Amino acid sequence: MTTMLKVSNLEAGYGPIQVLRGVDLYVDEAEVVVLLGANGAGKTTTIRAICQMIDTKGSVDMCGVELVGMRPEKMAGKGMAHVPQGRGTFPELTVEENLQVGAYVRKDRAAIREDIDHSYTLFPRLGERRGQLAGSLSGGEQQMLAVARAMMCRPRLLLLDEPSLGLAPLVIQSLFDRFSALNKDEGVTLFIVEQNANVALDIADRAYVIEAGRIVLTGGADELRENDAVRRAYLGF
Image (cartoon, rainbow, N blue to C red):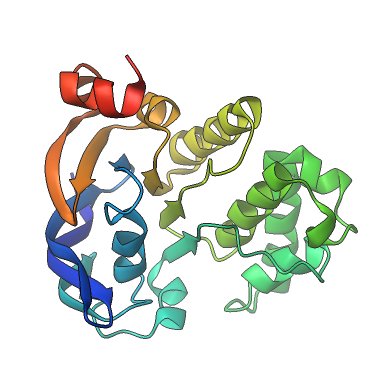
């Protein structure tokens, strides 16, 4: 199996505060890999470091290309898209305008139109609200829009940062069903940073657990679900 993303000895932080301390992980092509951890463990910092949004040391290799030192806006051209925590949609633009912004690196207008229509198939609610301002959408609808917008650059690797944050259980389940469909039906590789271990492990192939900026546990999704420490800390039983 081809390794799409390989992170080696990753160190990162904010000013004098070091958060990540030698993180190693990998994501194979067509996998769904989840990074679990408590608040403050380093989950979001990991995804920001991978995307080169903060200063990092170590290696982030995507399909043989070293990303450390690369400008974040060049990531889309390398086949990577990032859905940040808090969604990051443009509230003053309509749903359709947000999707068009997601295709800013592309010039193929006919194919862009096809992909926008496909977004409405994947997320029918967005189709119903295509002319509505993004800022007036519900939290779940905004998360759908953030994912659909990221998909407009046709990424091979989609990074999702806490996609369940602040959403109702039924909305979370619906979103993760869509994530699973993106992986299985469209071949998109997923790396998901998440606190909701129950729903994340349901669609994952493998998972990592991070504590205090270090990976402390890794294994198959079923294996981690049966791990007593994971069950007590993240699964609630």
